[in-house]
Length: 390
Image 1 (cartoon, rainbow, N blue to C red):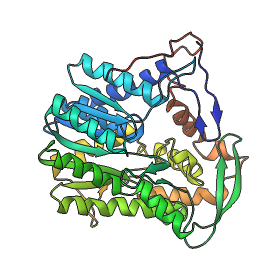
Image 2 (tube, rainbow, N blue to C red):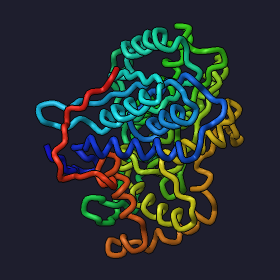
Image 3 (cartoon, rainbow, N blue to C red):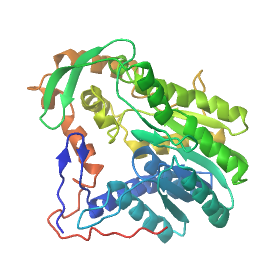
Image 4 (cartoon, rainbow, N blue to C red):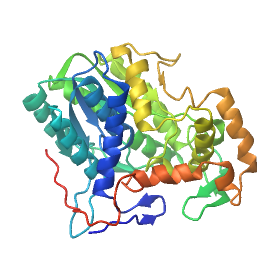
């Protein structure tokens, strides 16, 4: 079948197997070009491994350190002529490339929040790896079912305390407008923390520890974001921010339990999750323009390579006063933020493409789903049913 992008709102509902494979190969080639990394983990579990930072983390640890990896994700295979999800195709491509290099690349598809998937992961580690040296927790989900209570919680994208009005970008229509969002109530805040906070991270680490599948001194990493003042009301000071604060505080909890834990604060990139947040696509479009002009721009793979090559220090990471690894250091440089701040009040629907890198934003968005990759024939028939080795 010939597969074209079909975009609805902030989601592309189709994905291209050859394009996703090309995107994964680009990231693998980037790591190979930078060169092998010394030391580091050799057996890695990535919870949330099929897209974005989780996928790039798996690529860097496998092709940088030569690590055997086990990935956990929740992706959709192809069915009834419908393409699989991008994460499915990404993982199939990664698995083939890793196995061709002689690396173990195990995959578990299912709800990472569930006890069933935790148990299946533990059994697989015992059988294939014995133990793991590093656990990377990189889940992004709009809802979570608590495996103990059975209750399902849903997250919301809302400010806290008062309503929020700001410019936002309709990425479909390329229109900038003013949007007002009413504040979350206490239940919505609590539910968002339940979904996106650190509770499940603790459950994973406790389960792995109790099962004896963590190597001595095994560490764990999770990812977060802070961002600039212009996005704080809807992000850092909003419901998501409350959840991220909980996630960051969880690192101290895990470390106290004997599992060295850190949260890396990453820079803004285009992801399926960030595309849904008001204000963020406009901010990212302006940010990309400035960072590219200054030679500071990074995508997920560049960030994750820099994390392990320069910041992680084989388990002795460089951190800020709150014990966080700051990969957003280039984004938050005063000269970058001042340039973005100067552009912000001047951007309109009419000059959007002139004074921002909205074209770069759109390209990155489409590439999340395997579209717009060089060397891929998007007019050719492709097989949508791509198998994935377990």
